[in-house]
Image (cartoon, rainbow, N blue to C red; front, side, top):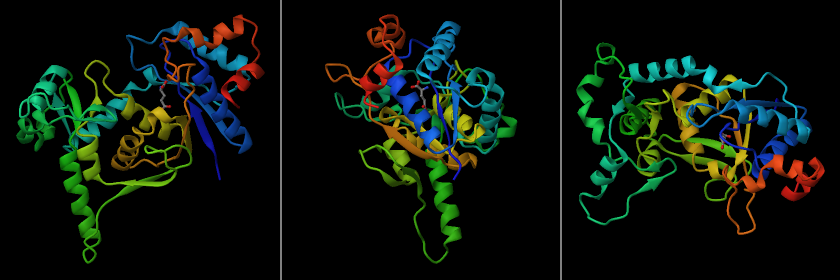
Length: 307
Ligand code: GLU
């Protein structure tokens, strides 16, 4: 079986031990399978991405002995592809503009029960759908209603769930079944499980909500870009940290919606600091370059992360 995997860092700070573990694990797996290891620079957040961090990524990886099999892909070079995918979803009436601020959303959610906890899913606060109904009429005629570029765009999960269930009932006229999608997890799934993980559009509605598929300031989102890029780079296996296990159903759902293949996912354990806290970009103390400057070898780094 072909094996293509990747490491997809954002050039917004120094790579630390957690990144080294992720990159080395994915690279080791590709070598063991006789497959390919690719590199993608996730730089859609233009305000935080810096060319000097990108250069540092190449240097750190080479120092670790990691080489990539094709020219690195940079997300900032793929904005046209993201736009085309959004145009397609827009013309299918599946996305809608939203101008709510975070405060608007919190107010809408807390209005019925003052002081109640705000529901949160893998993409943050579960959107209460304020802008969904306002746009219902225009969205029935998307071709006469140009896609605005001054608003966030959200996926209409209610509409999609209704359509998918409808399609499924037609397919199974006698079974009356329930539409589900699934993916294979070989590492740590959302509840720590591995194996086949299935979910329904209704689960998406209640547990994720209408998430932002394109941010007004980016013209895309992490979720949309990662899904389109993994497909464009022919990924068969996605190896990444367990902090993204929860977001994976968003990605698998988008793959289904966009007609893209679903890779196998392997979410790995996270590298933590001495207090058990996950390492963050700002945690410069664990930057690889710092260990290197202090005389550590790549073998020392392997030992430190338990590889
Ligand atoms: N760019 C993300 C990060 O640096 C990783 C995304 C992914 O592996 O899907 O955390």
